[in-house]
Image (cartoon, rainbow, N blue to C red; front, top):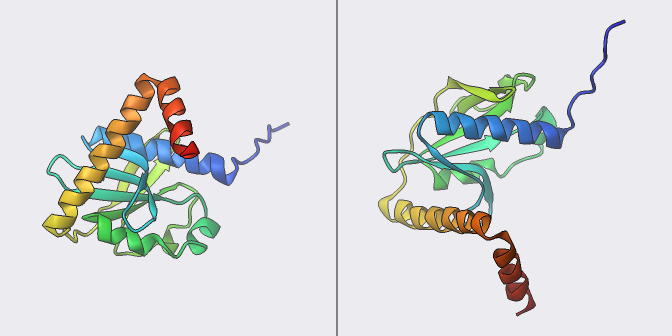
Length: 160
């Protein structure tokens, strides 16, 4: 009798795609930060700083419903030089816009299927985004070194 394995839930698929996409970035020398808050109030699934100072956003989509229900992804273009979608092998790729890059996850790895066209950021926006990126990344790194101290600080700030 063949074994039947349940399909991963959308949150599990999202997590797997995100991990594979982060590894994809690291293999290319990109510095990725997941769940990066942007100045427009949105949150990029992954914002990666490139070795040349450019930025890419990787928008993770776990299924067709996830993509079709999301109308905010075009707003990420104003905070990156190139925009990619990161999906898994089961995602219907024909849904994705042709003017975005495509990264496909297979287990723990991901491969580039289509590069994203460049739309360079204005220098002032790049500088502000770089500052925000560095602040966010440094804060997360410091929190890893002292989780209890940062939990206390967050609790104290919420109480104010």
